Image (cartoon, rainbow, N blue to C red):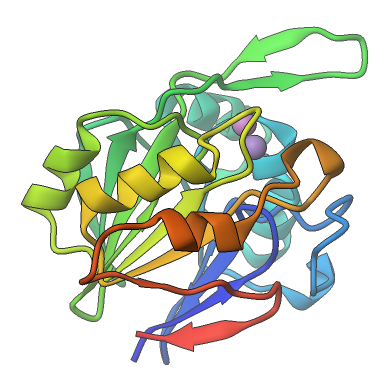
Length: 229
Ligand code: NI
Ligand code: MN
């Protein structure tokens, strides 16, 4: 039985009896985070791109737990430079791990680590993740615009759970995310990447009401809430 917990923003924990996987664990500085960094453990940490609201506390947790980072190549090279364990991948590629399979999908966005002096370190293309675990397929879209190839992703993968940004401004807003649901055709869709700050304060109810996909259940989660697939 795989369980998925929303940690606020784009951060999720996916876990079963054996494995603890974190995605984009932005905890410190996340006003909606229901947990403390020190309470999180992970054997794997997946990061969609280099922005601080996605790398978050990943490096700190990885150091403490000896987690394996599964990340886009250039972000992986950066993390290797910090002495962390890394499995580098890139868009279109899949790989098997002891918990299941991970495939990197395209995401239309940017990716960089930016320091306090506004120096930009390029960290490759941003991505989304298709994660297969315990026979279930979870799609974490990352930060992205709506794009037509979501239809291909939906056609070629039976998605049990789609995690979709709806916050607008930096990513899809509710209207585009609702259209994305029609392309992806997941069993369940959960909105994310909204409400963290005023600039991405969009309405999950608007998203839900705009979805015209009778086979999909739209689930509006609260940070800290967990579902079982
Ligand atoms: Ni971003
Ligand atoms: Mn973001």
